[in-house]
Amino acid sequence: MSYSHQSMGSGHRSGRGHEFGRTYVVRPKGKHQATIVWLHGLGDNGSRYYNNLSLALNSLCLCSLCSSSQLLESLPLPNIKWICPTAPSRPVSLLGGFPCTAWFDVGEISEDLQDDIEGLDASAAHIANLLSTEPTDVKVGIGGFSMGAAIALYSTTCYALGRYGTGHPYTINLRATVGLSGWLPGWRSLRSKIESSNEAARRAASIPVILSHGTSDDVVPYRFGEKSAYSLAMAGFRQVVFKPYEGLGHYTVPKEMEEVVHWLASRLGLEGWR
Image 1 (tube, rainbow, N blue to C red):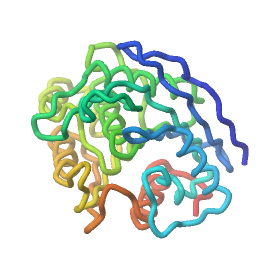
Image 2: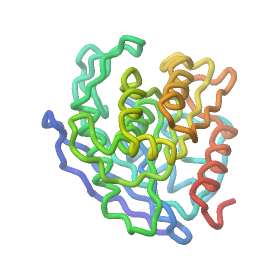
Image 3: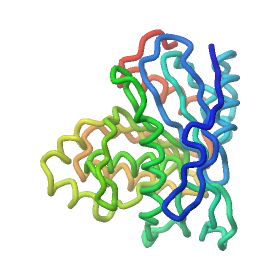
Image 4: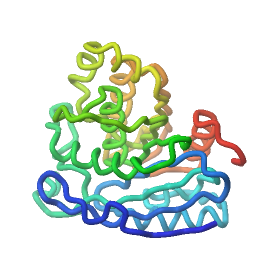
């Protein structure tokens, strides 16, 4: 196993001039078949995922209860290269303008939530840039927890539409998306946008997506995970899997992560996983 932490993408600025933090990379133990960018939640950073993933790939242990920063601890997938970037530090409306690491600005999560398209596009473009240099025979995907899941899902809609919210082309060929305890930005208009383009409908139908959410989540309420899966399916994303977890709060547990492992291995055709 070789590990590296490097500043790939570090120093890149978002549309509002916020600088993205350092990106950490864990290289595959086996044959490199896939690369996944894993995205942290609000106030977290890429190094915590990198450190926990590095430890997990050595021990392959399953903790009895994983916090968000230990999310990757139970993923024994030796053919995946993990890229763990860090969001910019920016004022966050939900926190009364207090600055912390965030992929975009967000207020209280509700049906009336106004999407920060500029922030979403800047982070989606940063993530796409991290994947742009991967070998052509390597499958690429995106996953995340909480706000990280939200930007992963937004990136997935950009892939389907072939463009960012600003209209600039989105050129990464995504092959899988994982969203844990998150929500779908832009859900109101997604269906009409997808249905207006045959190519968008084809891409939407082609990409596998797995979402999971705890029924007792008091940070991102369960109904938003359920609504996200429904909105994707109604927009033509035909390979959406939604996994509810009874009594689970805003964290992950081994059973959830084991299902993610099996799903990724199956959808990406990975060898040597266990």
